[in-house]
Amino acid sequence: MSGSKDCGGHNKSPRKKFRRVITCILILLLIILITILLIWAILRPNKPNFTLLDTTVYAFNATTVNFLTSNFQITVRSQNPNDDIGIYYDRLDVYATYRDQEITLRTRFPPTYQGHNEVNIWSPIIYGTMVPISPEYSVALGAEQMAGSVFLVIKIDGRLRWKVGTFVTGRYHIHARCPAYITFGEQSDGVLVGENAVKFQFYSRCSVSL
Image (cartoon, rainbow, N blue to C red; front, side, top):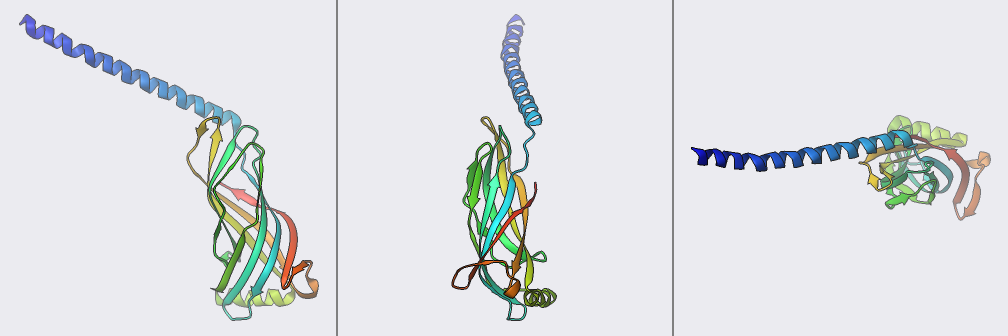
């Protein structure tokens, strides 16, 4: 009988040690998590700023009913306004829209890390060949082009991560919307920069949402 009691006592000792180790690990993880949350709450990361600096139009042809062929090179400026937080841009896709309808293919920026208060400049080309346009939008687009001014929105969609010290967060969605007015004919305020290429200066602040 005494032997069986000794065996029971031996079995309980390792279990207690194991529970203590697990408890210590959980407490440590909880402390780390609370520390990260406190740092995050104190720093409060600000959304990055995006600005559409200019757009060079190489092609914009809406003469075929319900179709549009276009080719642009845009210059986009991005700034990280945070003093202590870096930004990983894992994916950023840029494209042009007319009345919320995509009129170009999507062009992807290369993955980028943006340090504290750092500025990045991108100059991607976005284009679409014979992109289908809904009939009502096609009529409106043709009328606006004939009138001398077309309002487009350059959109940037993607995912980012925040970096605080050595801690990197999970991924967040980011959406930027940049207004762009393209003018034609005698009303055009663009500058001819090559054969059939017209450059428009904007410095247009983009609305950014996460």
